Image 1 (tube, one colour):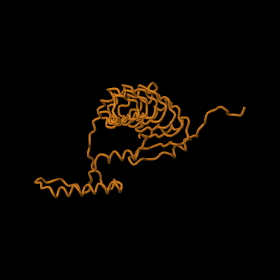
Image 2 (cartoon, helix red, strand yellow):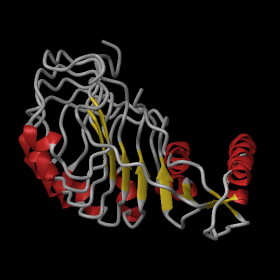
Image 3 (cartoon, rainbow, N blue to C red):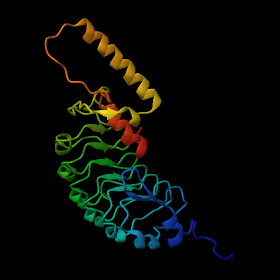
Image 4 (cartoon, rainbow, N blue to C red):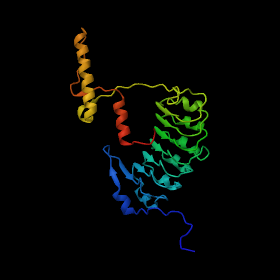
Length: 262
């Protein structure tokens, strides 16, 4: 028998030196360790030496398990594990109290393999559970009061718990391509979620050329309408600021952490 026959793929070996060289500092000052698309099959133990990073990207690998030592990463704000082969998450993930973003999309997770400790992530704002094997959403996720984005698309869900529907800050709730008989096609993307449109002021230098052109055009149209409408009140002027709708802010987030939500 040939040596090594029958063994699974070993994957790429990550050394501490290699991992250190893959740390980047984001525009907001966060340190990000990017180990995505590295062909990793097992969680690299060496990166426990770098557990003070704020962002960890292990997406698009072949990981089957996340060890309980993930609890060492107490500074994590952002954790991306999408597109692996995970069939469970460790309960220790609930100790990452600073986490605001968690993406476990496109794995092999079932409802039973989601640890109850997920409800301890009190600061979590973005949770992506899409493209897994969920047949229900744990009602305990209703305790995540800071959630604004929740993705559960492409699962086997037949109902949505009321505790999740009533999350106070939920703005985007993607339930597409689930066998949910009580939802109409129009309701599929957002199930009775109340959207709040917010206005953000941004400087011209922060916009791309196409957005800048669009906003200038809208501003010029607005000025024309103002010139045609007599008014006795003096309006405030912001010469260096543009006022696009809230999609400007949302787009900035998508450009930075573009996930797999369709």
